[in-house]
Image 1 (cartoon, rainbow, N blue to C red):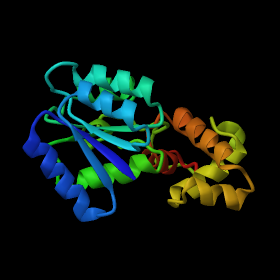
Image 2: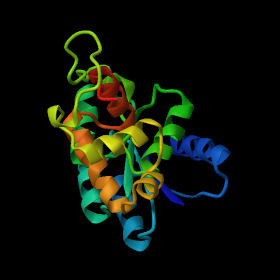
Image 3: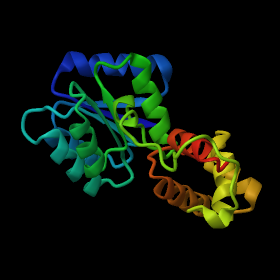
Length: 213
């Protein structure tokens, strides 16, 4: 896998690369000092899978860079690594197309976790945002499971949700339910939307609190 680190501080870039290589020495890692350099590299090499990007850089801002890079390379997974832990900045980054957000105040394993989550096709949302998310359906003590007709999910989506809660990846869910991975991905997106959540962890929590599972 090829990964691009975009940060204007050489020491920060080197530190990030060292951290990531400790976890996976087979990665191909490139560095860019600003968004403009990064886009030139992406023009020359279109096979990067993940970009780790700072919000505060000279020249083009990090948020504008997310929008531009996402438009140029829609398959590239962008993770923001920033000094800012402002919920507004987090939401803005996701709105522009980021797939993960890691405050620089987080522990080193947090970045490794974020990379693993986004490469699996999900978002990494920092705890500071998760703590603000209202839990859907919570209206008192846990209630027994309800019939699917009373829920904002189809029966098939509930089946997918059960596997999702157990931590099964899309490929495994597809094999067990006799579906294509594309169909499973569509169901997962619909589940997230119906439960007003951003990732599988939130979906599992919301489903349990609602008595769906």
